[in-house]
Image 1 (cartoon, rainbow, N blue to C red):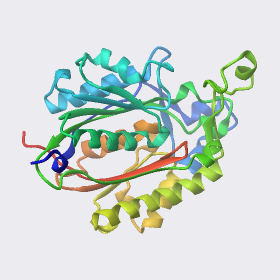
Image 2 (cartoon, rainbow, N blue to C red; image 1 turned 180 degrees about the horizontal axis):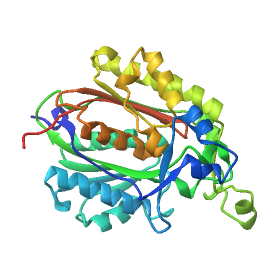
Image 3 (cartoon, rainbow, N blue to C red; image 1 turned 45 degrees about the horizontal axis):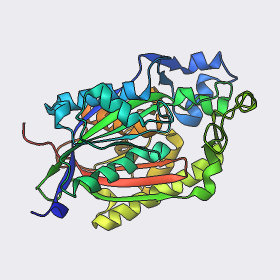
Length: 337
């Protein structure tokens, strides 16, 4: 079999959520909001907040260790490491390199970050798949890890109520069996709308100064109305285009696992696809928007709950800052134990 014919599937999933829970009631004591206001507009009841010394690489390492344990593998079995994050531990080196050291992975493997915000996990899956189908890599860890609490303005009630911290890891493996794992995908971006969701300061174009920090340029800012409009349109279109690639219809998909941004977005996307919300598993109420970590967190929970079965078709879809978006259709494959 040529390497181009190799399938790439998710062999195991691991997750980690910080210990601290921040409820809507607690937030109402910090900003002018209420539990009812937050739930009505987002579907979120609480979110996890990382400790001061808990970095994305720490959370990613714990999620990765769980995935490896579930697969019965060791760090020595990993050939490739990709971390999707918009909140890296430091500007450089990459969070992937820091995570490599914490996991004790081999030193002869590539480790790098993907920066596509909330679409990062979908982007990273496709990069890993293409690299693995070259035949050079058999197993890869693809990780979404975020500490959004570090870039949230806790005085801005329009954004601080939405975001949380966490990590999820997918252990990918190649297989000669056709028609399993990652089947079809689409990625896209529109930098013309970058200002709709962005962090203005801290990069080389606008290094932090005392003035920039006082102005809050270290925090994320979002035009919620416009983000909502774009997100619903491109997420629904992405799913439709990927299904067309695969020659399938939405009725054949067992589960849609979308980026957990806002319950209203999920409901609108489901409506556009004429799919019931019973096929859109959501853990928004407990975790909020965890950016690149949200899809693996939701995927793992659906698997743990017994919803996802061997052979199920699953559509994952995301939208994020950039603007970026992506969708991947996969057939869930559990190898013989």
